[in-house]
Length: 277
Image (cartoon, rainbow, N blue to C red; front, side, top):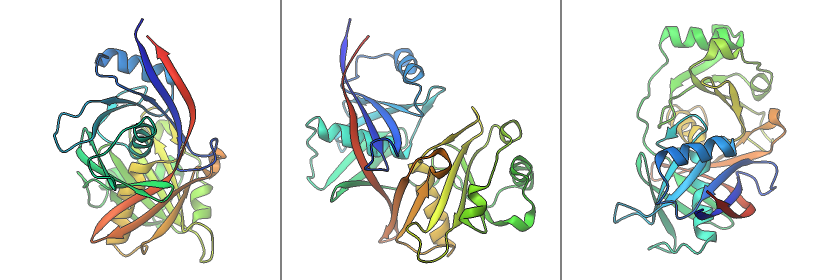
């Protein structure tokens, strides 16, 4: 049997049980695609990642990201969680202040900011308003009317995200999806909290292909920020709460620097060991 170092980390919360868990398999170059798929199905987490030697000379490491159903070119909480696990295992970046990750969308930059990590949002591969049929599908899946929608947009940076903004965080928290109607869309929904609250917005992430809600979603928060800030719907920096309905307390911290969006959050290691295959 082959033995691989294995980590399970909690992302977007310093509380080990309040964020989004991620499984990380280290030094996984010898694993086949089929074996990676099988491990991701077995962990049954929203994503499992595999650390590999980089192919791009500018990268510090390469990562492949798998859900139980498929491989993803990019995902946010796996980016922060994998970087954390790589550093914790002794990874040494070329630049002490910047880690360069290679993944399906190319090179992604990750910074250490105090006790948290933050990644630079990759460019959108699809943007613009939702088509009428897509928006109608979204409204039907959540029993919404056109008057409920403050704004809508394609915000796809790899996982296929589309998004709508509602009038308040409370309205977002009250949503109950009709999964059969929503499929196969991956939808983000956002609404603002009143001024003075600990978080500025509430985000929910509905995965129509598979019918589940993701606890805390870095890729969605990244692309939402690119839309919301650009269109003047929110000012940076801001804090996004996610996972409230799922009894999580995820927090994503969004800022803009020289026109680039950065997505940060706390990560902690929860499980450390080995996996025998």
